[in-house]
Length: 477
Image (cartoon, rainbow, N blue to C red; front, side):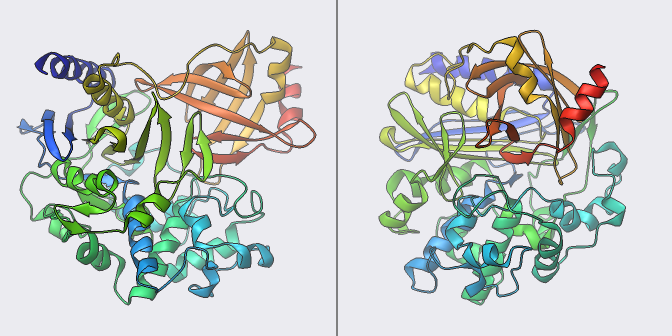
Protein backbone atom coordinates (compact mmCIF):
# COMPACT_ATOMS: atom_id res chain seq x y z
CA UNK A 1 0.00 0.00 0.00
CA UNK A 2 2.85 2.37 0.75
CA UNK A 3 4.03 2.07 -2.85
CA UNK A 4 0.83 3.41 -4.41
CA UNK A 5 0.36 6.10 -1.79
CA UNK A 6 3.90 7.33 -2.37
CA UNK A 7 3.20 7.50 -6.10
CA UNK A 8 -0.04 9.42 -5.48
CA UNK A 9 1.77 11.84 -3.17
CA UNK A 10 4.45 12.52 -5.78
CA UNK A 11 1.83 12.94 -8.52
CA UNK A 12 -0.16 15.37 -6.36
CA UNK A 13 2.87 17.43 -5.42
CA UNK A 14 3.96 17.70 -9.05
CA UNK A 15 0.55 19.04 -10.11
CA UNK A 16 0.45 21.44 -7.16
CA UNK A 17 3.84 22.82 -8.14
CA UNK A 18 2.73 23.16 -11.77
CA UNK A 19 -0.15 25.48 -10.88
CA UNK A 20 1.42 26.83 -7.64
CA UNK A 21 -1.30 25.56 -5.28
CA UNK A 22 -0.46 26.63 -1.70
CA UNK A 23 -2.46 23.92 0.11
CA UNK A 24 -4.49 20.80 -0.55
CA UNK A 25 -6.14 18.07 1.52
CA UNK A 26 -6.82 14.58 0.15
CA UNK A 27 -8.77 11.74 1.68
CA UNK A 28 -9.72 8.22 0.59
CA UNK A 29 -11.80 5.58 2.31
CA UNK A 30 -12.61 1.97 1.48
CA UNK A 31 -15.82 0.43 2.78
CA UNK A 32 -16.08 3.41 5.13
CA UNK A 33 -12.58 3.09 6.62
CA UNK A 34 -9.96 5.76 5.82
CA UNK A 35 -7.03 4.30 3.87
CA UNK A 36 -5.17 7.45 2.81
CA UNK A 37 -5.74 10.84 4.40
CA UNK A 38 -3.21 13.64 4.38
CA UNK A 39 -2.54 17.30 3.73
CA UNK A 40 -0.13 18.82 1.24
CA UNK A 41 1.37 22.28 1.52
CA UNK A 42 -0.12 25.06 3.59
CA UNK A 43 -3.55 26.16 4.69
CA UNK A 44 -1.78 29.43 5.58
CA UNK A 45 1.33 29.89 3.47
CA UNK A 46 2.38 33.11 5.19
CA UNK A 47 2.38 31.54 8.66
CA UNK A 48 3.52 28.12 7.39
CA UNK A 49 0.52 26.36 8.90
CA UNK A 50 0.09 22.96 7.18
CA UNK A 51 -3.07 21.73 5.53
CA UNK A 52 -4.63 18.55 6.92
CA UNK A 53 -7.81 16.50 6.75
CA UNK A 54 -9.58 18.83 9.22
CA UNK A 55 -8.76 22.05 7.37
CA UNK A 56 -11.97 23.91 6.50
CA UNK A 57 -12.26 24.95 2.83
CA UNK A 58 -15.05 26.33 0.66
CA UNK A 59 -16.42 23.33 -1.25
CA UNK A 60 -18.13 25.54 -3.85
CA UNK A 61 -20.47 23.69 -6.24
CA UNK A 62 -20.16 20.35 -4.45
CA UNK A 63 -22.88 22.06 -2.37
CA UNK A 64 -25.29 21.28 -5.23
CA UNK A 65 -25.35 17.61 -4.24
CA UNK A 66 -26.48 18.61 -0.73
CA UNK A 67 -29.28 20.62 -2.32
CA UNK A 68 -30.31 17.55 -4.29
CA UNK A 69 -30.27 15.41 -1.12
CA UNK A 70 -32.53 17.96 0.58
CA UNK A 71 -35.01 17.89 -2.31
CA UNK A 72 -35.10 14.08 -2.26
CA UNK A 73 -35.68 14.07 1.51
CA UNK A 74 -38.63 16.41 1.09
CA UNK A 75 -40.02 14.15 -1.63
CA UNK A 76 -39.71 11.15 0.70
CA UNK A 77 -41.75 13.10 3.27
CA UNK A 78 -44.48 13.77 0.73
CA UNK A 79 -43.90 17.53 0.71
CA UNK A 80 -43.01 17.78 -2.99
CA UNK A 81 -42.40 15.73 -6.11
CA UNK A 82 -39.47 16.27 -8.45
CA UNK A 83 -41.95 16.02 -11.32
CA UNK A 84 -43.79 19.10 -10.00
CA UNK A 85 -43.51 22.35 -11.95
CA UNK A 86 -41.32 24.98 -10.32
CA UNK A 87 -44.21 27.47 -10.39
CA UNK A 88 -46.14 25.28 -7.95
CA UNK A 89 -43.69 26.42 -5.26
CA UNK A 90 -42.34 29.60 -6.84
CA UNK A 91 -45.25 31.24 -8.68
CA UNK A 92 -42.97 34.25 -9.24
CA UNK A 93 -40.79 32.18 -11.59
CA UNK A 94 -41.22 33.88 -14.97
CA UNK A 95 -39.48 33.82 -18.32
CA UNK A 96 -39.98 35.65 -21.59
CA UNK A 97 -41.56 32.44 -22.85
CA UNK A 98 -44.38 31.98 -20.33
CA UNK A 99 -45.19 28.46 -21.52
CA UNK A 100 -41.58 27.42 -21.05
CA UNK A 101 -41.58 28.69 -17.47
CA UNK A 102 -44.75 26.72 -16.73
CA UNK A 103 -43.14 23.54 -18.12
CA UNK A 104 -39.92 23.63 -16.06
CA UNK A 105 -39.99 21.07 -13.23
CA UNK A 106 -37.86 20.54 -10.15
CA UNK A 107 -36.25 17.62 -11.97
CA UNK A 108 -35.15 19.96 -14.75
CA UNK A 109 -33.44 22.21 -12.19
CA UNK A 110 -31.79 19.21 -10.50
CA UNK A 111 -30.38 17.95 -13.80
CA UNK A 112 -29.45 21.33 -15.32
CA UNK A 113 -31.92 20.78 -18.17
CA UNK A 114 -34.27 23.71 -17.56
CA UNK A 115 -33.17 25.49 -20.73
CA UNK A 116 -31.93 28.50 -18.75
CA UNK A 117 -28.91 30.04 -20.50
CA UNK A 118 -25.80 31.09 -18.57
CA UNK A 119 -26.56 34.33 -16.73
CA UNK A 120 -24.51 36.94 -14.91
CA UNK A 121 -26.73 36.70 -11.83
CA UNK A 122 -24.06 35.00 -9.70
CA UNK A 123 -22.08 38.24 -9.84
CA UNK A 124 -25.12 40.23 -8.77
CA UNK A 125 -25.57 37.83 -5.86
CA UNK A 126 -21.88 38.19 -4.99
CA UNK A 127 -21.80 41.94 -5.54
CA UNK A 128 -21.51 43.00 -1.89
CA UNK A 129 -18.69 40.50 -1.30
CA UNK A 130 -16.96 41.64 -4.46
CA UNK A 131 -17.15 45.30 -3.53
CA UNK A 132 -15.69 44.51 -0.10
CA UNK A 133 -12.85 42.44 -1.56
CA UNK A 134 -9.54 44.32 -1.32
CA UNK A 135 -8.31 42.39 -4.36
CA UNK A 136 -11.33 43.10 -6.56
CA UNK A 137 -9.20 44.60 -9.34
CA UNK A 138 -7.15 41.38 -9.55
CA UNK A 139 -10.11 39.25 -10.58
CA UNK A 140 -11.52 38.85 -14.06
CA UNK A 141 -15.05 40.17 -13.67
CA UNK A 142 -17.67 41.34 -16.17
CA UNK A 143 -17.39 44.99 -17.07
CA UNK A 144 -21.07 45.42 -16.27
CA UNK A 145 -20.56 44.57 -12.57
CA UNK A 146 -21.06 48.22 -11.47
CA UNK A 147 -24.39 48.28 -13.32
CA UNK A 148 -25.65 44.99 -11.92
CA UNK A 149 -28.36 45.16 -9.26
CA UNK A 150 -27.75 43.69 -5.83
CA UNK A 151 -29.37 40.25 -5.88
CA UNK A 152 -29.64 39.72 -2.14
CA UNK A 153 -32.88 37.73 -1.96
CA UNK A 154 -34.67 35.02 -3.88
CA UNK A 155 -37.18 37.66 -4.97
CA UNK A 156 -34.35 39.75 -6.43
CA UNK A 157 -33.03 36.71 -8.26
CA UNK A 158 -36.42 35.69 -9.65
CA UNK A 159 -36.98 39.22 -10.98
CA UNK A 160 -33.54 39.25 -12.57
CA UNK A 161 -34.05 35.88 -14.28
CA UNK A 162 -37.41 37.06 -15.63
CA UNK A 163 -35.78 40.14 -17.16
CA UNK A 164 -32.48 38.72 -18.35
CA UNK A 165 -32.90 35.04 -19.29
CA UNK A 166 -34.12 35.76 -22.82
CA UNK A 167 -34.85 32.85 -25.12
CA UNK A 168 -34.39 29.35 -23.67
CA UNK A 169 -31.65 27.10 -25.00
CA UNK A 170 -34.20 24.41 -25.80
CA UNK A 171 -37.37 22.79 -24.46
CA UNK A 172 -37.13 21.64 -20.82
CA UNK A 173 -35.32 18.32 -20.51
CA UNK A 174 -33.65 18.42 -23.94
CA UNK A 175 -30.38 20.34 -23.48
CA UNK A 176 -27.79 20.45 -20.71
CA UNK A 177 -26.30 23.69 -19.44
CA UNK A 178 -24.90 24.05 -15.94
CA UNK A 179 -26.96 26.58 -14.01
CA UNK A 180 -26.19 28.15 -10.65
CA UNK A 181 -29.53 29.90 -10.98
CA UNK A 182 -31.40 26.61 -11.15
CA UNK A 183 -29.89 25.33 -7.92
CA UNK A 184 -30.44 28.68 -6.25
CA UNK A 185 -34.13 28.33 -7.08
CA UNK A 186 -34.12 24.85 -5.56
CA UNK A 187 -32.84 26.49 -2.38
CA UNK A 188 -35.88 28.77 -2.44
CA UNK A 189 -38.18 25.75 -2.94
CA UNK A 190 -36.55 23.96 0.02
CA UNK A 191 -37.16 26.99 2.22
CA UNK A 192 -40.80 27.35 1.23
CA UNK A 193 -41.61 23.66 1.55
CA UNK A 194 -39.72 23.02 4.79
CA UNK A 195 -40.44 26.34 6.48
CA UNK A 196 -36.75 26.63 7.38
CA UNK A 197 -33.88 28.70 5.97
CA UNK A 198 -31.91 26.57 3.54
CA UNK A 199 -28.74 26.50 5.65
CA UNK A 200 -30.70 25.52 8.76
CA UNK A 201 -32.46 22.73 6.89
CA UNK A 202 -29.20 21.27 5.57
CA UNK A 203 -27.57 21.49 8.99
CA UNK A 204 -30.46 19.75 10.78
CA UNK A 205 -31.19 17.11 8.15
CA UNK A 206 -27.81 16.31 6.58
CA UNK A 207 -24.80 17.73 8.44
CA UNK A 208 -25.80 16.84 12.00
CA UNK A 209 -27.18 13.34 11.28
CA UNK A 210 -24.04 12.59 9.24
CA UNK A 211 -21.75 13.76 12.06
CA UNK A 212 -20.25 16.56 9.94
CA UNK A 213 -19.23 18.73 12.89
CA UNK A 214 -16.79 20.94 10.97
CA UNK A 215 -19.12 21.90 8.13
CA UNK A 216 -21.39 24.91 7.82
CA UNK A 217 -22.51 27.92 5.84
CA UNK A 218 -22.28 30.88 8.23
CA UNK A 219 -19.11 32.89 7.54
CA UNK A 220 -19.10 34.11 11.15
CA UNK A 221 -19.09 30.47 12.33
CA UNK A 222 -16.23 29.70 9.95
CA UNK A 223 -14.10 32.50 11.32
CA UNK A 224 -14.52 31.14 14.86
CA UNK A 225 -13.10 27.74 13.93
CA UNK A 226 -9.48 26.65 14.21
CA UNK A 227 -7.69 25.31 11.16
CA UNK A 228 -9.49 27.33 8.49
CA UNK A 229 -7.70 27.80 5.19
CA UNK A 230 -6.58 31.14 3.87
CA UNK A 231 -7.68 31.91 0.31
CA UNK A 232 -5.36 32.37 -2.65
CA UNK A 233 -5.75 33.56 -6.22
CA UNK A 234 -3.64 33.46 -9.36
CA UNK A 235 -3.72 36.94 -10.85
CA UNK A 236 -3.17 37.37 -14.58
CA UNK A 237 -1.03 39.75 -16.61
CA UNK A 238 1.40 38.94 -15.15
CA UNK A 239 0.64 35.58 -13.49
CA UNK A 240 1.11 36.07 -9.77
CA UNK A 241 -0.03 34.03 -6.77
CA UNK A 242 -1.58 36.35 -4.19
CA UNK A 243 -3.05 35.93 -0.74
CA UNK A 244 -6.68 36.96 -1.26
CA UNK A 245 -8.51 37.25 2.07
CA UNK A 246 -12.26 37.71 2.18
CA UNK A 247 -14.71 34.84 1.67
CA UNK A 248 -17.31 35.49 -1.00
CA UNK A 249 -20.93 35.00 0.01
CA UNK A 250 -24.13 35.05 -2.05
CA UNK A 251 -27.23 34.67 0.17
CA UNK A 252 -29.58 34.24 -2.79
CA UNK A 253 -27.38 31.49 -4.23
CA UNK A 254 -26.26 29.70 -1.09
CA UNK A 255 -27.77 26.42 -2.36
CA UNK A 256 -25.60 26.58 -5.49
CA UNK A 257 -22.19 26.60 -3.85
CA UNK A 258 -21.43 28.08 -0.44
CA UNK A 259 -20.97 25.23 2.05
CA UNK A 260 -17.63 24.99 3.88
CA UNK A 261 -16.26 21.61 4.95
CA UNK A 262 -13.28 19.34 5.49
CA UNK A 263 -11.95 16.15 3.93
CA UNK A 264 -12.90 14.10 7.00
CA UNK A 265 -16.45 15.47 6.98
CA UNK A 266 -16.83 14.95 3.23
CA UNK A 267 -15.71 11.33 3.52
CA UNK A 268 -18.59 10.86 5.95
CA UNK A 269 -20.96 12.56 3.51
CA UNK A 270 -19.91 10.27 0.64
CA UNK A 271 -21.09 7.27 2.63
CA UNK A 272 -24.60 8.24 1.46
CA UNK A 273 -23.69 7.12 -2.06
CA UNK A 274 -21.56 4.16 -1.03
CA UNK A 275 -24.14 2.62 1.30
CA UNK A 276 -27.38 3.58 -0.39
CA UNK A 277 -28.34 6.31 2.04
CA UNK A 278 -26.80 5.79 5.49
CA UNK A 279 -23.91 7.37 7.39
CA UNK A 280 -22.71 5.67 10.55
CA UNK A 281 -26.04 3.95 11.04
CA UNK A 282 -28.06 7.14 10.45
CA UNK A 283 -30.33 7.00 7.42
CA UNK A 284 -30.10 10.21 5.41
CA UNK A 285 -31.86 9.02 2.25
CA UNK A 286 -33.75 5.95 1.11
CA UNK A 287 -32.03 3.60 -1.35
CA UNK A 288 -34.66 4.62 -3.93
CA UNK A 289 -33.71 8.29 -3.56
CA UNK A 290 -30.02 7.51 -3.90
CA UNK A 291 -30.75 5.56 -7.08
CA UNK A 292 -32.74 8.50 -8.45
CA UNK A 293 -29.93 10.92 -7.60
CA UNK A 294 -27.33 8.75 -9.35
CA UNK A 295 -29.30 7.80 -12.47
CA UNK A 296 -27.76 9.44 -15.56
CA UNK A 297 -30.16 11.98 -17.05
CA UNK A 298 -28.31 13.78 -19.85
CA UNK A 299 -24.78 13.88 -21.32
CA UNK A 300 -22.73 16.75 -19.89
CA UNK A 301 -19.26 15.93 -21.24
CA UNK A 302 -17.26 13.17 -22.91
CA UNK A 303 -18.28 9.91 -21.20
CA UNK A 304 -20.03 11.88 -18.45
CA UNK A 305 -23.72 12.32 -17.59
CA UNK A 306 -25.47 14.68 -15.19
CA UNK A 307 -27.90 13.19 -12.68
CA UNK A 308 -29.34 15.16 -9.72
CA UNK A 309 -26.58 17.42 -8.40
CA UNK A 310 -24.04 14.73 -9.33
CA UNK A 311 -22.06 13.65 -12.37
CA UNK A 312 -21.99 9.99 -13.43
CA UNK A 313 -19.02 8.57 -15.35
CA UNK A 314 -18.74 4.95 -16.55
CA UNK A 315 -15.14 4.01 -15.82
CA UNK A 316 -13.17 0.79 -16.28
CA UNK A 317 -16.32 -1.30 -15.82
CA UNK A 318 -17.29 0.71 -12.73
CA UNK A 319 -19.19 3.93 -12.00
CA UNK A 320 -17.80 7.23 -10.77
CA UNK A 321 -20.39 9.23 -8.81
CA UNK A 322 -18.82 12.65 -8.56
CA UNK A 323 -18.99 16.43 -8.60
CA UNK A 324 -16.63 19.35 -8.38
CA UNK A 325 -16.59 23.00 -7.47
CA UNK A 326 -14.62 26.17 -8.09
CA UNK A 327 -14.82 29.50 -6.33
CA UNK A 328 -12.39 32.14 -5.16
CA UNK A 329 -9.88 30.24 -3.01
CA UNK A 330 -11.42 26.85 -3.70
CA UNK A 331 -11.16 23.86 -6.02
CA UNK A 332 -12.99 20.77 -4.82
CA UNK A 333 -13.87 17.30 -6.10
CA UNK A 334 -15.68 14.31 -4.62
CA UNK A 335 -15.96 10.79 -6.06
CA UNK A 336 -17.57 7.54 -4.98
CA UNK A 337 -17.13 4.18 -6.72
CA UNK A 338 -20.00 2.16 -5.21
CA UNK A 339 -18.92 -1.12 -6.83
CA UNK A 340 -15.58 -1.00 -5.03
CA UNK A 341 -16.67 0.74 -1.83
CA UNK A 342 -14.19 3.55 -2.55
CA UNK A 343 -14.67 7.24 -1.81
CA UNK A 344 -12.26 10.13 -2.36
CA UNK A 345 -12.17 13.87 -1.68
CA UNK A 346 -9.79 16.66 -2.70
CA UNK A 347 -10.13 20.18 -1.32
CA UNK A 348 -7.68 22.99 -2.06
CA UNK A 349 -7.27 26.74 -1.61
CA UNK A 350 -6.61 27.79 -5.21
CA UNK A 351 -9.34 27.77 -7.86
CA UNK A 352 -7.14 26.46 -10.70
CA UNK A 353 -5.98 23.35 -8.81
CA UNK A 354 -6.76 20.24 -10.93
CA UNK A 355 -8.80 18.65 -8.14
CA UNK A 356 -10.65 16.26 -10.47
CA UNK A 357 -7.36 14.99 -11.90
CA UNK A 358 -5.83 14.46 -8.45
CA UNK A 359 -8.91 12.69 -7.09
CA UNK A 360 -8.97 10.26 -10.00
CA UNK A 361 -5.22 9.67 -9.75
CA UNK A 362 -5.64 8.66 -6.10
CA UNK A 363 -8.42 6.23 -6.99
CA UNK A 364 -6.36 4.88 -9.88
CA UNK A 365 -3.53 4.20 -7.47
CA UNK A 366 -5.77 2.13 -5.21
CA UNK A 367 -7.27 0.31 -8.21
CA UNK A 368 -3.86 -0.58 -9.57
CA UNK A 369 -4.29 1.54 -12.69
CA UNK A 370 -1.76 4.00 -14.13
CA UNK A 371 -2.26 7.22 -12.21
CA UNK A 372 -2.79 9.25 -15.40
CA UNK A 373 -5.67 7.05 -16.67
CA UNK A 374 -8.39 9.47 -17.78
CA UNK A 375 -12.17 9.51 -17.52
CA UNK A 376 -12.54 9.46 -21.30
CA UNK A 377 -10.58 8.20 -24.28
CA UNK A 378 -7.99 10.70 -25.41
CA UNK A 379 -7.28 9.75 -29.00
CA UNK A 380 -6.85 12.03 -32.00
CA UNK A 381 -9.86 12.02 -34.30
CA UNK A 382 -9.58 12.89 -37.99
CA UNK A 383 -10.84 16.38 -38.72
CA UNK A 384 -9.98 17.70 -42.19
CA UNK A 385 -8.56 21.24 -41.98
CA UNK A 386 -11.21 22.52 -44.40
CA UNK A 387 -13.96 21.61 -41.91
CA UNK A 388 -12.41 23.55 -39.03
CA UNK A 389 -13.82 26.84 -40.33
CA UNK A 390 -17.31 25.77 -39.27
CA UNK A 391 -16.30 26.19 -35.63
CA UNK A 392 -14.78 29.65 -35.99
CA UNK A 393 -16.46 32.57 -34.32
CA UNK A 394 -17.31 34.23 -31.05
CA UNK A 395 -19.29 32.51 -28.30
CA UNK A 396 -20.24 35.20 -25.75
CA UNK A 397 -21.64 34.14 -22.39
CA UNK A 398 -23.77 36.44 -20.27
CA UNK A 399 -21.54 35.35 -17.37
CA UNK A 400 -18.97 37.75 -18.83
CA UNK A 401 -16.69 35.38 -20.77
CA UNK A 402 -16.28 35.34 -24.55
CA UNK A 403 -14.76 32.26 -26.19
CA UNK A 404 -13.20 33.10 -29.54
CA UNK A 405 -12.38 30.21 -31.87
CA UNK A 406 -10.23 30.19 -35.00
CA UNK A 407 -8.79 27.42 -37.13
CA UNK A 408 -5.03 26.86 -37.02
CA UNK A 409 -3.43 24.06 -39.01
CA UNK A 410 -5.06 20.78 -38.01
CA UNK A 411 -6.68 22.15 -34.85
CA UNK A 412 -8.29 25.16 -33.23
CA UNK A 413 -7.02 28.11 -31.25
CA UNK A 414 -9.30 28.91 -28.30
CA UNK A 415 -9.00 32.36 -26.78
CA UNK A 416 -10.70 33.16 -23.48
CA UNK A 417 -9.94 35.54 -20.60
CA UNK A 418 -6.75 36.75 -22.23
CA UNK A 419 -5.25 33.29 -22.76
CA UNK A 420 -4.86 31.18 -25.90
CA UNK A 421 -4.64 27.39 -26.13
CA UNK A 422 -4.34 24.95 -29.02
CA UNK A 423 -7.14 22.38 -29.12
CA UNK A 424 -7.04 19.11 -31.05
CA UNK A 425 -9.95 17.03 -32.28
CA UNK A 426 -10.65 13.86 -30.26
CA UNK A 427 -14.18 13.10 -31.45
CA UNK A 428 -17.01 14.37 -33.60
CA UNK A 429 -17.26 18.12 -32.85
CA UNK A 430 -15.16 17.44 -29.72
CA UNK A 431 -11.82 19.11 -29.00
CA UNK A 432 -9.40 18.75 -26.09
CA UNK A 433 -6.71 21.01 -24.64
CA UNK A 434 -4.42 21.18 -21.63
CA UNK A 435 -5.61 23.46 -18.83
CA UNK A 436 -4.10 23.85 -15.38
CA UNK A 437 -2.60 20.37 -15.30
CA UNK A 438 -5.70 18.59 -16.63
CA UNK A 439 -7.33 17.81 -19.95
CA UNK A 440 -10.34 20.02 -20.72
CA UNK A 441 -12.77 19.77 -23.62
CA UNK A 442 -15.17 21.82 -25.68
CA UNK A 443 -17.97 20.27 -27.73
CA UNK A 444 -19.53 22.20 -30.58
CA UNK A 445 -23.24 21.72 -31.18
CA UNK A 446 -24.69 21.60 -34.70
CA UNK A 447 -28.27 22.48 -35.51
CA UNK A 448 -30.62 20.59 -37.85
CA UNK A 449 -28.97 22.32 -40.82
CA UNK A 450 -25.51 21.15 -39.74
CA UNK A 451 -24.34 24.62 -38.81
CA UNK A 452 -22.74 25.14 -35.40
CA UNK A 453 -25.01 27.19 -33.15
CA UNK A 454 -23.44 26.67 -29.70
CA UNK A 455 -20.51 25.26 -27.76
CA UNK A 456 -20.48 23.35 -24.47
CA UNK A 457 -17.57 24.87 -22.58
CA UNK A 458 -17.05 24.69 -18.83
CA UNK A 459 -20.34 22.72 -18.69
CA UNK A 460 -22.15 25.83 -20.04
CA UNK A 461 -23.97 25.80 -23.35
CA UNK A 462 -23.02 29.09 -25.01
CA UNK A 463 -24.66 30.32 -28.20
CA UNK A 464 -22.56 31.36 -31.16
CA UNK A 465 -22.83 35.06 -31.98
CA UNK A 466 -25.04 35.50 -35.02
CA UNK A 467 -22.53 37.74 -36.77
CA UNK A 468 -19.46 35.70 -35.80
CA UNK A 469 -18.87 34.20 -39.26
CA UNK A 470 -18.96 37.61 -40.90
CA UNK A 471 -16.59 39.04 -38.30
CA UNK A 472 -14.06 36.25 -38.76
CA UNK A 473 -14.26 36.50 -42.56
CA UNK A 474 -13.70 40.25 -42.37
CA UNK A 475 -10.73 39.76 -40.06
CA UNK A 476 -9.20 37.20 -42.41
CA UNK A 477 -9.70 39.51 -45.37
